[in-house]
Image (cartoon, rainbow, N blue to C red):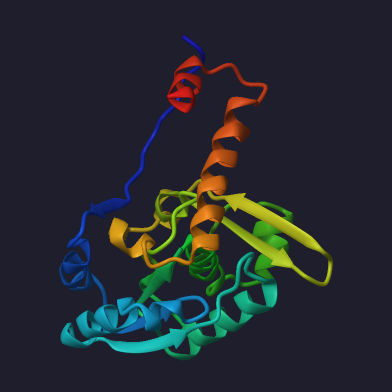
Length: 235
């Protein structure tokens, strides 16, 4: 047997066609103010935005939106998100899509949206530049962490159930990922309705498939010999 390890993945997954209906019960665990994070606006065209907001309003939440999260979220966007979170004393960050002083961040979208939500969650209370502290020096989080929830619309990175976050600094032309060790940075819950992925354009669906394939290959062709993982990858 190779080595020893401790594994914990506290993210609660709701999977299935009606999984979004579990959102209200999760919302009861957090305060009134919710920061809703999403990308370019496709969730407004396919009806997902309307359904998410309906549940938020019915749960008595006050919603503060942070839209326009781009693929490979930028450092400038991160600063903007932290400002919105702190100014509105938000209790939850909900990321909707394909990765203030907030108690929960709800992300709707794909991996980039989830990545961005986690970056905001660890950076809002950071007492120095989060880029320097968390992405250059790779230090552990020693400040308050804002909980994150995800509603996934695009698959690819697994950001909906890990503690990783990738941010791009356009000025220095650096794209850096930090896999945080604190399990509190993992999304507290993620809602996975496979039908949401069917709303994607053909190009985005294809990109997600290749993203999955490439992530599998990264591990498979690594220098580490792990037969179990390799067999799963081959399967």
